[in-house]
Image 1: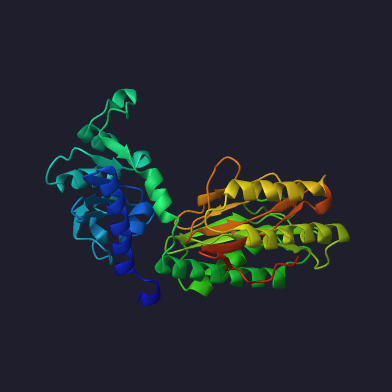
Image 2: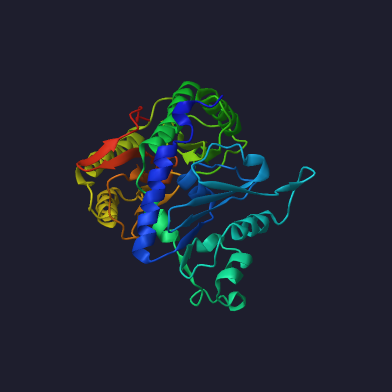
Length: 379
């Protein structure tokens, strides 16, 4: 039986629908087509899994029409009408499942609207043909479908209490995995064996199958999937871990010294990275520039050459492992109340065997940030 604490929060979904409806009205849209699986879950609570397609229609009157595979009609969802499509024939998945989903979506529309919003990356040829534009020549500009993906990405940044509960639960699996890793990492441990045991720990902690498991499980390397390789004394094990709990992601990192005794050089690099988090906690507030924070941390860590910091400082997390805001010089985002961020400075060099990455999670509040990952940070 599903734990009610983590089931679909109908009231929260309806609040999100009202926020999207208000944005529709501002843009003069009569209808929006929500087509990406994570967007459908965010709006209605429907999580159909990776093998199936789903879609939502929200009209200007606020009516929510949800299109689901026929075997998923019993899901608890926040919708006014649920329309099925055939996803299997005699237990075989249909090749054109998304097309079947979109046909059911179109059949549910009472009239042809003039102003439509849709997620461009998930629009199929049938929807494009229905709403105009020369799809053969990639002419989106003359389509009556306005791209609402940037809008949905922006709306999803603000994490509601039901979302935070699921993400906290996912982080409880991360905590259990780090505790396990500190107990078992020693010279000779195989990366694949550690990976398998960490997965088992996460499943045991959550009491159900994971909807995601990643990211970095290599020793003496910056990251990657595990290898058939034994860890050696003196090396560093970067564990950048994340699980999916009912579609929501966790993402944080700890680095563990194999043998339990980091060198003086490794400890000094760790100290430099640990200094980043008080800086972040003093600088992040609503309206502050993510790019400016990145540049400040980059300048701080550049003082430690030849060790290098050459990746983003962090990102939002939610129904995708990377969401807004982007703590990255290629974006010019600004922090907003409700952002859930992962901050992950790192330093890398061969003499560090081969580097350290530390990652903490924060929620942006009206007064600054609240740290959400209080488990041990040391090597």
